[in-house]
Image 1 (tube, one colour):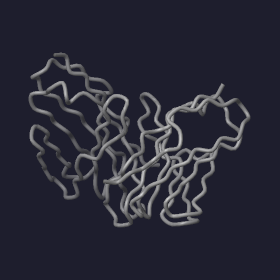
Image 2 (cartoon, each protein chain N blue to C red):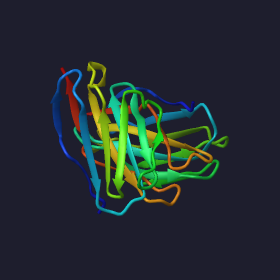
Image 3 (cartoon, helix red, strand yellow):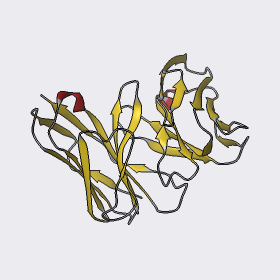
Image 4 (cartoon, rainbow over the protein chains, first blue to last red):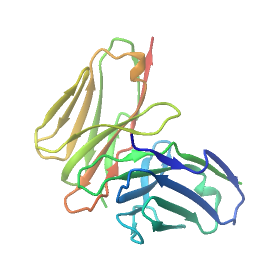
Length: 113
Length: 112
């Protein structure tokens, strides 16, 4: 079974802090994704990566950056956290073949005070 | 950009009743996937539809992909309490790398 592990289940940070969310997958998947989930808005794609050191903007990249230095790890960075970034963050991975399903981590519930 | 809407946003049904959620895209899709998220859990892949007009079944769940490949539906027959959760569709545009756009989700509550 694919295992996608997010470093924290719950996280509380302060406005203006730099926040790192880590995601690791153990299936040698080429593609990795970061979403945020908010009530009534579904899952919105922040960034994705289809290879090491490659990244593509999703639908809501503003205020975020990402890093993919190793194939198994995809990090989401909030450069200067703001209260409107309080949300559930979900990481996912999929294999390189098109049409493959995404496998999700358990999510990080991030609160920015 | 591409938008994928789902209706209804919420649905309460009595156990044993049927349930349907509809997914509508603003653009033509190359395929559509369906996911289920249990309360407190993460989305889990259910199925993928690729062909125009395709219908697939998983026990009590029936999935359809529209002829124009812009809409899809999930129908659950005789709901059970284990069906509780939020159902998401996710559509991929032609040529869109691995990026999919998730729908807004339908939250299903089943009353025993």
